[in-house]
Length: 273
Image (cartoon, rainbow, N blue to C red; front, side, top):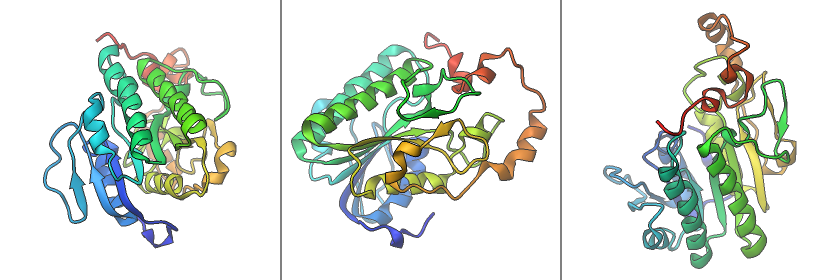
C-alpha cells in the first residue's frame, strides 16, 4: 500500500463499484486514503463498513439502484461487472446495460470523472509478436472483450456529448505474482494498480483516455505513448519472477492459440459453457 500524501487531490466522496471482486477487494482499503468518504458497492454482501466507508448494494442492470448509488459522488472507480468469458446474457446485463445505467446516472447526478476497468482482452486477438498502441483498432477475443470495447466506446460518447471524463484501464494480469510466461508481459502488481488508478483519478485533464495496465515489465506487447499525460509510472516488474516462471514452464507450444495471441486462454474459452 502506497503513501497517499503525494496525491494532489482528495475527493469528498469516491465510489468503488465491484468492491467484492478480486481487484475491488484489493483497492477497497487503498482508496480510502484518497477521499473523505469511500462509497463501496457490490451486488452482494460486503460485510461491515470500515471507518469512513458507506456501503450501498446495487446491481448494475437496475437503473434505479444505479441512480441512488451515484448521488453526491465526485468520481467513480468502476470495477464492477462480469470479468471473465461467459455466456452472453450475464455479460449483456452487467457490462452493456449496466454500463449505460452507470453513465446515465453519472450524467444525471453530475459526476464528471470515471475510471473504468476495461481489459487487455479488448485487443486479445493481436499476436504476441505485435506491439499494440491505444489508437489501434480493437480485436476482442470473446464476448467479454467485446463488452469492454463497447464500454470504451460508451465512455468516448459520454465525453464527447456530455463532458464526462473517463480513463479506460486495459488491465493486464493483476495478481501477487505472474502465473505463467504470458504474464511476464501482462503482469500488473497491486501497488502499480493503485498507482494507475490514482493517476487516472488525479490527472488534470483526461477527456477519454485509454491506457494499458501493466507493470514495468521487460517484455511487453503494449505501448502507452498516447497516455503519457496520465502520469502513470509503474515501479514494479515481473522480471524478478522470470527465472521461477520459466523453470515452471520450460516449453511453449507454437501451435497453441493461447501462445500465439495476446489474449492467452481467453481466445479459446467457450462462452457457451
